Length: 308
Image 1 (spheres, rainbow, N blue to C red):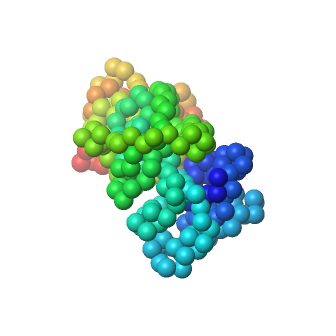
Image 2 (cartoon, rainbow, N blue to C red):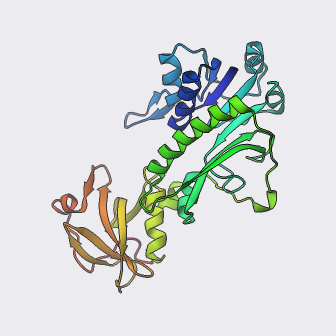
């Protein structure tokens, strides 16, 4: 099938690779303009751009899809369908109406649950035990289009946003190829069951040690790898990458109850967490044991604000 593909990060690149392996004709690739990244903040190409250049695909990087030249360039391709996966730009009505087989979106949740920008992180934060992929026929709403295909997967107790992303990217690619082959009849979403997944801000990733240990442990997994759950100790910012629940911990929230090579035990609003991997600002990710060789944490000291 002749397609236009729109996507930006690695999640989208996995779907683009699957379309190429399935011998679809990807006549045009749309991706976001290069963005500053890394310590030098130099403009970096997206994962989709890198794959498109490797495969010799025609590429556009518009900052909007509403201008006449961009719409004309897409229309000139005459695609049968337009496929979107984690693109980041809104498709205007004129573009939604352009392909005869519509615009398909690969969404990382079981819609109508977790419409929006951060469905993977929101599922982990909520303690969901199941998530999945929805292939949706796009309309003008926020992830409100009719469902073409869905498939669920279990969320493992140890899943982070990174590991769940990789599982869902692979599933999304497989389901996308199946959808294009079968073009199943669309089924309307139940709007009354909708929940929303707003974008994650850095401030949201600060650990509030007054929360229960189970919630804090979920937040650490949900914000791994980005933006990273964080706290402070005597003014030094620390990112917490991996932790487990520690039972029978009774102390003021944020209190460091033990600091040993096997982990740093911190009291929470109820129970505690054992920090297994963490990172000082500007430093490397380290196991608790390696971290403690260069950073002293006294038992009875506290993480977080003194007002917590």
